[in-house]
Amino acid sequence: MARRNDDQTRYRIFTRRAMLLGAGQAALLSTLAGRMYYLQILESDRYATLAEDNRINLRLLAPPRGRIIDRFGLPLADNVQNYRVVLVREQTRDVAWTLDALGQIIELSDYDRERVLRETASKRAFVPVTVRDNLTWPQVSRIEVNAPELPGVSIDVGRTRRYLFGDPMTPVLGYVSAVSESELTGDPLLELPDFRIGKNGVERQHDLKLRGAAGTSQIEVNAAGRVIRELTQRRNEAVPGKELVLTLDAELQLFAHEQLAAHESASAVVMNVENGEVLALGSAPSYDANAFSLGISPDYWGTLVNDPLSPLTNKAVAGLYAPGSTFKMIVALAALGAGASPGDLAFCRGWLELGNARFHCWKKQGHGWLDMIGGIKQSCDVYFYELAKRTGIDRISEMATRFGLGQPLGVDLPGERPGVVPTREWKLGAIGEPWQKGETLVTAIGQGFILATPLQLAVMVARIASGRAVTPRVTRGFREVEGEGPVVGAEAPVFAPLDVPEAHLKLVRQAMDAVVNEQKGTAYWRRIAKEGWEMAGKTGTSQVRRITKAERDEGVKKNEELPWRFRDHALFVAFAPVHKPRYCCAVVVEHGGGGSKVAAPIARDILTEVQRRDPSAAEGLPLLASSQVREG
Image (tube, rainbow, N blue to C red):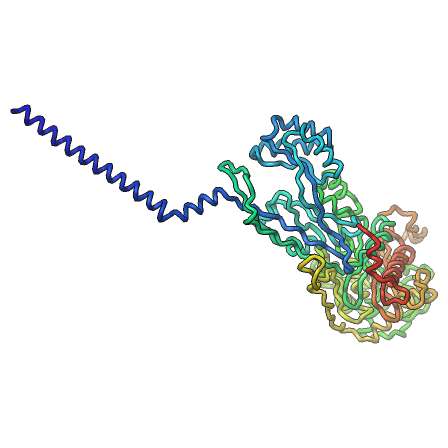
């Protein structure tokens, strides 16, 4: 009986446990079924999307960079195919052995080998690594012929920036180069391995418009990230950058560069005085921008950086020079504004005394009696010492500012420097000393603290010639589509009249005419002889060293007798034609000596050339046809 009761008790316990277990299993199955229903039915769209995102990767497509052309449509910068050799680590047993074999076909530097070994070790085995780019067609052919003996090696095709004229155009165009870490902004386009951005010149100034907009391509990958195929139906092409149209005349730019390249260091600016368009802007020595686009070597970079002639500096907008006697027109205008008469006479005996100091004229024996036109024509220092004493530094500085000196002009090029127009307040703040009367005299002949760029000197002359507040520009505008449609932004600006009486400007123009086209003018032997093309100008010579009294007593050494870095700078500014000014030019030759001897012939030849190329000239050549003669 007792045993029967024990069996019944165990049976009840087993049954109860079985029911609990069954209930638990049912609950678990219900939970799993509910979760599966939630995932597969309610959340099916979400997880399908996640799965698709894991399977499909979005790849950016770099846009073609916009072309740069001159005012007549001649290409200055465009894009060309770039052949490069790449290596995939998983397709070769030994990367070092493959590089050795490849090095017998094309040249590979130690730097290239080390970089490839480093990148193949750090990246996934199936990711291609660029070994060398910018291959020539013969190099591509040799690699393709030997492809069976080069496991993992293949040729890839990209695009690279090409500058068709090299050195002469670099001061304006600048260059593109790889994006540095400091330039990353979060834009994924900048993180593409071969993407280039503008680093100088108009390439930098208008980088965003030239850059364009990235496209996208969807690719299918496996779980390891290996590309399986591209989904062509989901490809959005990149939007090319806009085409940049410059005000430059490429042929004139080349001509100007040839004139400057004959000297160790020089610069020149040619402008249209009516609309401020820069037709040529040269700086020599220069450098080939293609070296940066293709990948500059450390040795070449070191050569450029350490060159004492500073080829990396655009001297036309960033070179600062004492303007010398080219500043005398500003002093004359300031004096006229202060009440001086053009007929006022001053006697030059070769020097002027102020206190216990003697200020010398460039002509040791003196010029005798001169009026204002004679003072400018013969560039008499003593005459302008006398003018400056009566006018004062405040009026001179104010007039210089009115003509564009001592301030940024806003030209659409990076690196522009403002120069210096000294005032009492400037000296006290910069040097901590009060202004001295003798410094006014030195400023009157364009020496001392005053500094200007060649572009500022060109603008100064443009304003004298036109009577308007001309400002320079090198950009005409943009085209949305390469070679098609209107140039947006090409409208000619309207400049306000200067607050200077026309009679005063006319007198200075007359004096500049006398400098070049009358005997005893300092540039008479550099004039343009062709009737109707005559130029008016002003010579300038600025000292870079102090001439001591002892040297004056013994005889001042000629520039040719001095080391190059101690020679005077040579300057010349001019406009043409005299009867109806349309063009102006400013030339600075560093340590060139006399402005009349060295700088004036360059300006004369450039102004002759620009007038010869003017279609409105009687014997001018059609510019477009002339430009098409030269190919990149």
